[in-house]
Image (cartoon, rainbow, N blue to C red):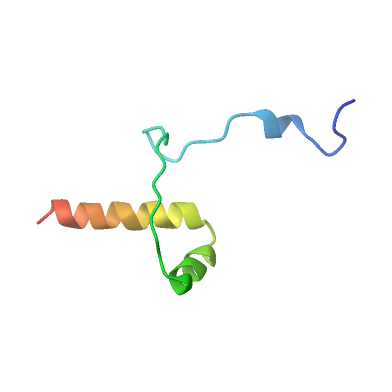
Length: 62
């Protein structure tokens, strides 16, 4: 029996943001206040990726 709430669009693969595939996971500890601030963002995962990329760019330019 098909799911009445499902749509065929949900079965399509997601759109990648960038050229490299995101296949690796990264885990690190933060304070509770940092966690809440990140989760308050519109897209918490992309916010973290952008922040890490910005820090990496700054360190590579030195």
